Image 1 (cartoon, rainbow, N blue to C red):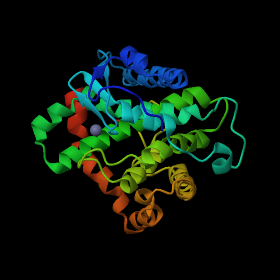
Image 2 (cartoon, rainbow, N blue to C red):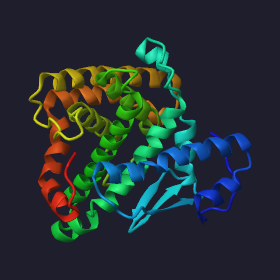
Image 3 (cartoon, protein in one colour):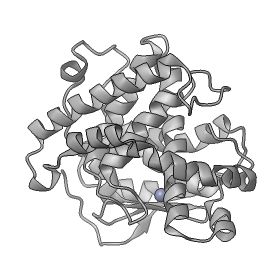
Image 4 (cartoon, rainbow, N blue to C red):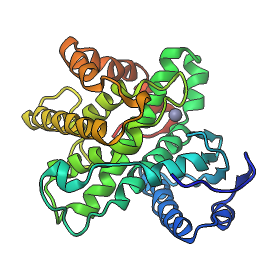
Length: 298
Ligand SMILES: [Zn+2]
């Protein structure tokens, strides 16, 4: 990871932040990353057929891996941007055992994950989570379900982006797998941002469920009850990809804090059925979210 020189907790526009980066290579890589990642805001408006005013983006010079949405403002810590940019990952060839199509390059790991983070924060705003809290109260269950709502909408939006970019180069299941692969590396080492976010094992289980159940057709509801056989097939392939990524992660990351038993944890959740707990909690609030925000659950 590279380190930047600045005073801590300055709140900067993207251009001001870029101007502070002393290293030209890092500045240009960051410029590209922020350009593609912030484009997700308008893409989500388009997907939701909304014409919400886009929020202001501020970069906070702070090494902590954090982002937050306050009213119509999204604040992203510089530490989180650097984290997305420099996360270690195992190569595409090793994980998928094939040469990537020309359209893919490893920059897409950083772009997909920062886009996902921005999409998560934007969901808190345009799905009017503040109004849901007013109506249902700020119980831990509601707060957790809203975090889950933000995770889910963010996943859906990155999947729709990859569909458009990749559909001529790979089949639908492979697009879903590339999505999981890209998000895995930076998110695997992201500490739980607050006590309302679930630990990474459960969060990655939730990602698998969402990626597998999303309908290929953007106008069709997701297969939440796993009625279609290909949903289960997709889930099982994604689960084995997740395990492969985790095994590779343990090879390239020797930090003690990351030596967790994610695979054991994951298998236990599948076996005892607790991997569906989050979805069940989310279903309790989803209709209120749809009503107060005039959006549908994609
Ligand atoms: Zn959140």
